[in-house]
Image (tube, rainbow, N blue to C red; front, side, top):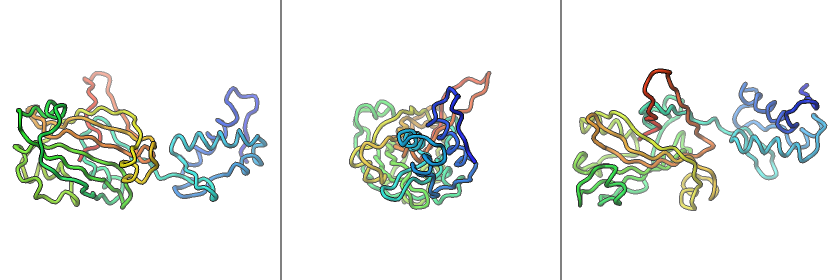
Length: 255
């Protein structure tokens, strides 16, 4: 029997959310399981409807549960964790989590990139790059929208390669003999546009995680400028540091 401490400095709704979070963390409640309803919370903890609703709202905002109108609240799918100090492809990440990775190619075009991309890729005036837009999936579920710019002179005929079934990073290393070194990413919150929401199977305005930056080859040669939009309910990022090592946030999930 779970109880709350009415003399605690912690609000009642927060104590209830902690109890429910623990049941999720301990796998007592698994993804897809129905959790306590507002009525359950009112009866079990003798709290008001507003307190019960606030407790559930906390878990919804954290992405731990989701609501289905007329059916109740359910445990959300586990988030994919990514360390920000490792250069890891999306394909490798999905496989490490026991999910089957795949991609849906939305666009592939050869163009002169916008000035900001030209600067990041250190292209000469008029040099072209491949713009690749892919929807990234895990077990068929939309996970991220990935837009990459790859210099044409480093990867000629890239538009003839199958980019839906394998890792772009493996392709760059295996087919083109390039040696990836590091990725410098900026991570920030954003919200889904109508187009992004449709692809990622979320509502417009849903919070997303944006990772944007440049991947370098050995010798500090830019090979990719990427923009990845992750579903915030499917991903969380972790940072590992050491006391004396020089710290540069490099990595984040790649191609």
